[in-house]
Length: 407
Ligand code: SAH
Ligand code: SF4
View 1 (cartoon, protein in one colour):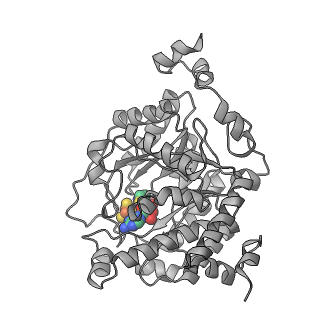
View 2: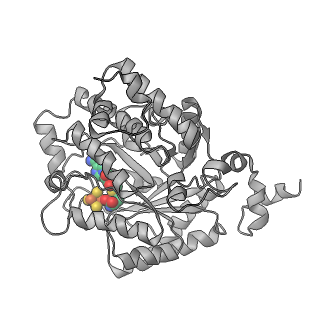
View 3: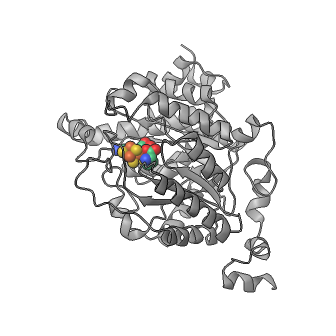
């Protein structure tokens, strides 16, 4: 077998190579893996963590994924739906605090009222920020026409986790009712790319019965599919769900098991960074759900995106995809201070005021990042760009900021 050192210097990785990296357990080996992945990140996308303020605006869902805490059949959930004004107020906060981008996330709905509502919200967000706010959607499976309408209204990134790239395993984690079909989800990703979105996907890590080989296949799926952004995280039990209750009953939710899923989560980030150097990778909240330093360790392992929760505080307790979700009791101001500290602890710079678009996306379109605006070449310029540059161009800017312009 190859020396680990040798394997970490490679630029191409086979299924066996990836399986070996994902399975590393010894502390020294894992640290070597994370160091190698961090070095690749520093070289390709920079030592910058980009922010996307996460607005979880409704927990109403028409689906019944067996693992999810807000699935349709979960009777214990108090359902909520934010208004357009509420969402726009949160988006304005994100823009004023220079996160650069928002992610709009909710349960899955495809009815015309919902589709029109999102379109309206998107136009409102673009208007209030004079087009400054980058917008990622995470609203599940939709028709190509809906994706196109939302793209035309201003969204430019879409996150749709494949959840599990193996269709047979996917079928085990979803009801077989015709409403949870792997091929449909896969086709949605194809459509998103065709329309021009930066396409994001990901999987849950540490699902019952999932092997390291399955996870290696997930990375190969990202590559085959030409994915620009990855949002993946450990599976965490959600009580009152069919999968969560079964895992709990079979003794699969011990501290040791949680640790195993956490380590797998970090190893997956690092192996993905090595195999796909220029994609954006998020250090997800679920990592922090299993370890208080989860997100910064994710950045150290090669991730370059954070999604601080900016959801309306009163709705946070009702958007629990899994148990003990972190940040539920925090305000957005607390989250801002907290994530900035975490980024610096990890040795990165916060990418304030930048969209932080995926370098992979530029490469696949044969374009280079636009200086001063996007990831890559423009990083330094964007970080140094004073906020007032934005204000001069935009009448919707906050008053106190406008006053600084003339100084
Ligand atoms: N309804 C949309 C978006 C909201 S769910 C969709 O499903 O695409 C966002 C993500 O939460 C899902 O993609 C899933 O990967 C994750 N998730 C759901 N339940 C989870 C759990 N118990 N542990 C970890 N992640 C979970
Ligand atoms: Fe709904 Fe998404 Fe949860 Fe599935 S994972 S039940 S689609 S919110």
